[in-house]
Image 1 (tube, rainbow over the protein chains, first blue to last red):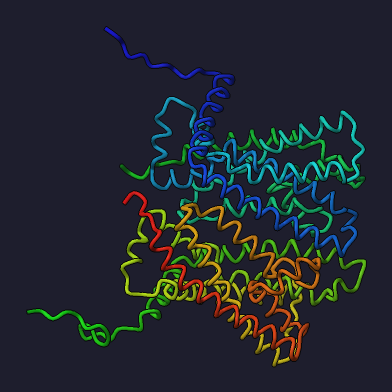
Image 2 (image 1 turned 90 degrees about the vertical axis):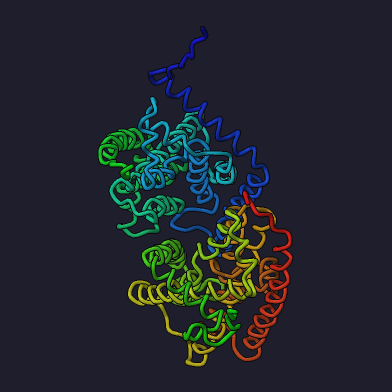
Length: 276
Length: 279
């Protein structure tokens, strides 16, 4: 008699990563199904990014530089923040589904499956819409890299690639962290995660122009400056008193990931279901 | 034999309110129910105003005027532009798109209302609550923290309000037209992003029109969107006076008529194209 075989998910880090990419592939396939939706979405997102670019070009047609930063250098900041943001949207934007799952109790299902709940959550959404952010981000990055006045060395290029990888993980972790608030504040219309993630926009500009409060905010509470501003200080060889912070980005990413992992466990313990 | 309800006047002893006013008041109640969201929406808008404020402030450290704007004028422009922008919240049109998605739009089709008029009434209701909160907060924060300047004269203040009302209707009609596209393409996110970006740039919300490169100025000056932010603020700051000001107001009114006529025809056509999803 034929026996139903249940394949057990592979354990360990390698198994988890393999599974993660398999789940993501499903989302990519799904978004290709809705082709019109994809193209209109990507076009809309590109137009949206273009409006920032128009602003920057208009601004810098009247001003040569702001706090010592030129148009192309600010474009680089936009790219450094935009590309990882787009990659997160493509590869693991599932944190945004948490609020709905916790609110309706469908999070129960996540908990009873024989798979890491974190993995399931992160990979529960994603798709090629992220390209709408990632492509303009990449273009700005390239423009900034070529015209921003960086004296490129192989080491610096390696630094840039590492920064982008580290920033993607950092933004993904911060997105999850912001969304964990739903375990404490389960309002269905809570805007807290959106507002938190919007703070990344501050890091699209040289921090020098902001007051001390905002500088501390995007360095400490919402460390988005480690995605763009601090690495850019290294790339453009700008010597300020916090120039060295650029090298710390990967360490910040590791620290944030570790902290969010702990917080995730605490959050899971708080989950009570909705009573069915 | 039972008699059917009369078309107007008293129903069951209760006098009916005019229909569009009823739609407007219902929207007001809805907006009041989600007042925290309203405050959040305002704060989201403000967030960019703060960024622009700091950016321009840094730019003005080297120079007294940029494109004819002094720093006090520029910061007044930035703050008010964002206040005006939050008059219509970003999710006001969301209900209509949701109706298209779920197929509930069919209910709108059987209502004895001009759909365009009803939607504008809805936006008005929402904006009376959300917009009042927005503008109130803008002026408050603007005056306390950002050195907001008063209008150059009482007359320009009064005409600013007139232009602002025209700008509101322009934005409402443009938003309605963009939302109608959802009925054909069935995908709303992309259209809404593009709509937002186009409105931001061409209304003069992110940068005053006179600072734009000439080709963009040419486009902006003939399109209706400048009536939303650029025209009211040019009047407020006294950048335009006399015949030029009247010309701008005339352009705004002419565009309003055109937009209304287009919108009124388009919703009828859109309803014929409608596809009820999952119905």
